[in-house]
Length: 407
Ligand SMILES: *Cc1c(COP(=O)(O)O)cnc(C)c1O
Image (tube, rainbow, N blue to C red):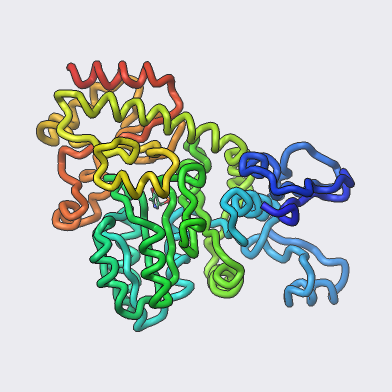
């Protein structure tokens, strides 16, 4: 990241580094704007509005002639520090924070589409993203087509028609289907489509969609970015023309803003995100290998296993298998429930990317909003479970799984 992204303030009066620092250094320091008190950690600006020294200054602030903060629905100093820090880590020109991942997902599309426009998306998605694309936007005359994540011929066919936006979730929730970001971005750009990647499952640590050709990266920051079960948040990252010209005019008036308090928590989360995600990733790899050979398990879907159908694409675009494992259990929903109820450490919960290991039964919870037919298309059956691996000692997690599988 360039030194310009550093918010070093006159208080210390030291120059910013004159070399491009590593993402982990940005994760601890980028965006830091100190007040005159010279506080070590980021300050929390819990205020909705700002004052001006003159009527002229207010006028100039509203016409964006100066950098003066105006109102926390538009901008807030603590939220801005979080946005700068995440942009630096991701290598994006701009970042905008949101009150939740879904607020970011909706705005990512709503700010660019109008009646008559067409969206192409992958068929396996987080259920609320599916609802936005297949139910909400069509009410306003936006059409869509869904393509199976790894069906490149299907993507080429769908993207032979005029398309405004491509929405990809890779790896997908819950069954870890993988889309080739580079190949689909090339196809999409030929028809002028904006490529949006929901990178919540991989996190900024394990996959960098902008470097693979995507235009916009979307996060549920609730997941690995906070990753400690405290706040809901979202983010969109992309170019000046997307964020400043398309997105900001839309969200300034619709108000999905992140609270300063939550941004302050997320600033601290970013400092440890790399360490947390790397450890969760290696724990998940070990657990996936353990589960794959277990006689009570029908199949294991994990991007870090050679058995994943798209392991070639995974090697090109991810630097680890991630923190989430799809498990197809041998037996009925009743058996799957009994297994979940027998766990002593791993919690039953629908969140993921958390420091606490969590297990979910998608068809009865996170994905129940989708019809049985759509669920079946995503491979979600009553015997599928999703395990989000946390930061506990992996030996205890394997012991827990083992005793529950035996009981
Ligand atoms: C959780 C999640 C979302 C939604 O994010 P929220 O912060 O819960 O609104 C979107 N996409 C994916 C892949 C998710 O896992």
